[in-house]
Image 1: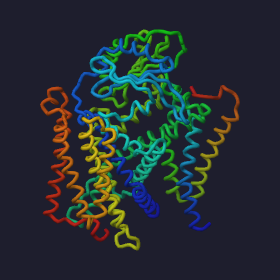
Image 2: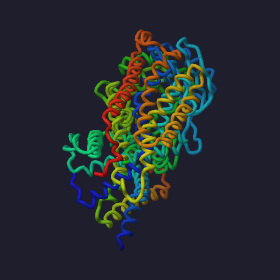
Image 3: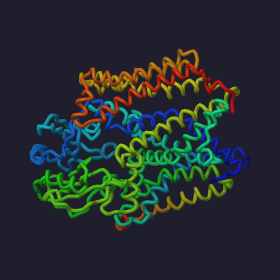
Image 4: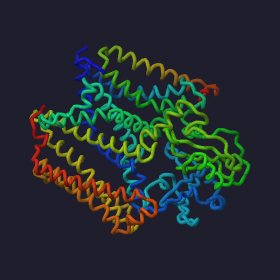
Length: 525
Length: 101
């Protein structure tokens, strides 16, 4: 227990309140989209109706890789990224690294290999083009992009979400410091008192339970936002005279004597089979350094093994396809810094123990949204009747808090309607903007907060209930086909949307009967 | 010193001061931290610890009753790490670069 003196506690209460009020609404948007993005992969499969279950890394690719390597200009053979794209198609990105306005980028040729082994797509561009939104992943890419940078161009978007991460860190630490009875607060939910007291308890209970999680999310999130935008240039300036590429090679590269003699790439099929057998899992990503040279190195990246948190990677000799070593994700040998950096990603995304850890991260993320939303409302209630009116902030909080889920549901509906037409990359953000405009319009014309809340909840519930039928009507796979193809996640998400929509409607009906007063209309605690 | 000016000095240390000093310390740490078994700890740990460095400086500026101590810790860290960076840039010898093994 931390017992701060009175003055310091007062300062921490002010810091806790203002850290939420100044950036709380943006933080809410980042946390809510991040909560949904925990299931980005599953949402991608559900929305696009992906039914293939055989990984691209389990199909023969060695001959295609050699042939495309020969066809690709030598300037783009510095490195190759191999990853799954679309419905378990294979993406091959032959590229070179270069600096662009102080930022390290990859530029080259990108090929997509279909399940029949034929090239279905060929594109010249940078990593931004290759890893950006496509027609079939526009919804999940939209969620991730909103979470990562709120659609603000880089580096400003990342700097903004990094600052939001720091504000969440401040809220989490100050929240811990102002608790006088931490363990008592975890279990205190007074239902018999005033609505304000009940809501304060609910905020406190949700906040206390999710405190360690909030700290981890804020810390890892700000690390990711500042890593490339501020951290790498600053450390590169100190250690490598500003050469970011040299820093990247020192941290991620595989040291060895350069051998630029030409040599055909080894048998990639043998490497894939060996890597899957050793790791017990399909690679999530594969990189080839120095493609077509005698010193080529292949690194395969895999999810963590059972009971481990850090992902694993295996290193192969690119020319002979011989296994060299199991290597840490960062650095050539295991080290404290490498291990800490490697666990940042699973700690942030919650993907270290499959669907179970993802479900826990989703639940705790939802609790964080609740804490942010109710925290702002409590701050406003405490100032009710003061000299300055915050009615506009109360309404804005409701428009963002309840309007954002509605706008996200609208973007999902727009995606489902537009994907068969091939225009989902445009219509998914457009659907979100239409939903957001409707929520803002409702905020402007609603006669009172209770009515606005009911409108937005009802509209969100209706949209959630409509998503599964719209998916089916626009050509998505039926439950029977999804089960037969071994993709139960499509059915699971359909049921989840139906339950969420049904529960929202049911709770609204319950509320209408009970006539519970809004906390904003009650006298301050 | 009046209470108002003390408050503004505290805000300066907690706000822009904490950001600036965290950046300088992050850069300076790369020069004195050991490289570890892989020779990369001095490069990676400052990147990981940067948010915590900032949070430490922010909460110290908010909570320490002695403004003198706040200034001593913050300016001390700034001076030591600035000196390390300046020494690195003034040192022409190539042996003093890159990772510490």
